[in-house]
Image (cartoon, rainbow, N blue to C red):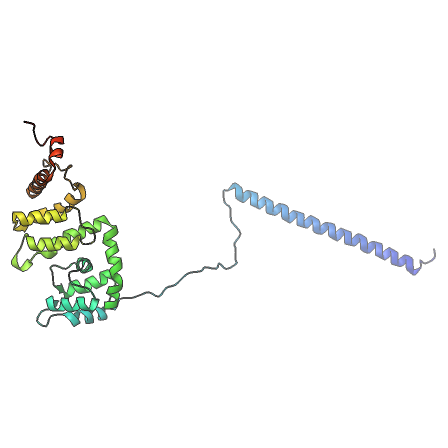
Length: 285
């Protein structure tokens, strides 16, 4: 047999290479399919056991936060402020120091916000802040300077204007605040009570307030007890200005019974004769 030409040899080699390449491809596909089937089998076994593991996300999370400078109170500034107004002979701010303190704050001592500030400081009596009351009070309102206290005024007034319970607490505090502790007072002199009622109700005076003051003056009531003081707020909140819903069989102080009776009699006297006949206040002869 003669030898093949170079072309035949080349074709024969090419055919072998092609068959070899196809065999490798088939083997690779078979291997990949085996890997896939194996992975599915493992996942099925894992799922049967009730576990499921999420793939980890290695991408970094971007967390955006807003940071604000924290305002720390300087107790040294509070102590310096106290020392500026403190009395020379006593470790407290007394009348003269209180007057200067109010001047620097730009308020009159008889303003409502001063009463609210005294309430926040838990002052034990008028015209006086002890060292502890002043320091604790500044911390309570979060202020350590005159400017800081001034900036808190709107917030303090809004606090008692919007929260009935806080206003009620302020109202009850006012009675204790007005007592002369050194004199051992247990009731407020009527003149002091009226001044404090005007102050605590200065933002929203009850309709009966002026009538109440007139009655106290006309009857020359000498003092207001704690019970009368506290119940008067309840009275203004529940009783109509014409007293039609007042029931004297309820547990009101006797002073309120007398006040309502007095006002009803005055109302009857000022009522026109036609209205008296209409309401049965005047009997026909």
